[in-house]
Image (cartoon, rainbow, N blue to C red):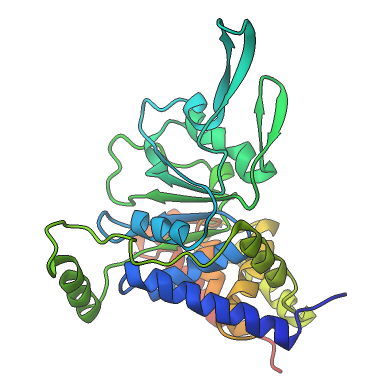
Length: 325
């Protein structure tokens, strides 16, 4: 079984540090969020970004798109958005007397699904096949999506009027659910200074972000991440955490086997971002909340007592013994 050697790992780590620095030029004070998005990219997976307006969700995705030369598309999800607006449709061309297929914006490398919970279920479900099978079926024909393909969706957790909560099947296709919180005082001051200094606009741009990658580079990074060593004891630890969610009194429903898979996939990226070519129990802990918070359901009793999925998962991580070296 091949693994990522030290020389290969160092090249990947150096490149990741450069990407992280470029993203930090546009998104100030969200280093953990940047790392978690990069973990999703390394895993070749989809991520859901959740936070109140104005915290840089869309900006982060645009900055990530700027770092590589692949195709980028944005869909603003609205209540009147139709599935064909996402995946495309087949129509009859009167001029040529034949049917032609118009491909939708989903045929891209990096797709920003902005405010995904504002579209009804039938439009949300138009992404299901693309996210799981990396293809889109139009008029009975399967059309492969460009590779790499990654969906980054955003949603506002506070404003619920006119929204349609994502169904479990849709949530399960996101490897990570990333929460963006308010920056601390120092970072907020730096952000305000950056936006207002000799600038008439009110938003940060991505013009200062440098393109570092091609689509082939991204695929190479993902292939390297798949070779990061995961010891059997570390893998068993990930499984034990997920199984513990099913027996925890604070959860009415625990995470399924995809939770264990998500922990291992995400932990490889976390290891590389920490400068290693092997996964440790701390890497598992680092990705546990974004990998599992959308795969568990908090019981009504726990909610009444003020517990959230995050607080329950944090307590569970303290309770499940980690393997010692």
